[in-house]
Amino acid sequence: MYSGLPVIDGKGKMLGVPTESDLLNAIRNGRDVQTIKAEDIMTQPAICVGEDEELDTVITKMIEKNVIRIPVVGEEGKLVGVIARSDVLSCMIEPDCVTVFGD
Image (cartoon, rainbow, N blue to C red; front, side):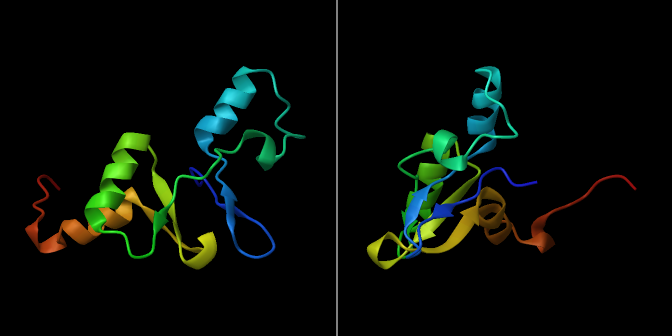
């Protein structure tokens, strides 16, 4: 299950991101999930970071905007990737430093 997927145009430019929250809001508002279109509910403009953004900026945007994953854009707003909170955390917390208690 994905919490949000980027929607791009034919040239790879970011248009928006339909998220779980967007879908839940649509359902709460009586929308038919079988016929709903991403463009009708997606978060616009997309909350993105540039491919050269500092990690601190990425973390700040994730926290301030309360997003689980964030599209990464390059030149002319073209999608080059997606970074998730779990990606950030797995890079910051080394497995050797984590102690697991119990069986």
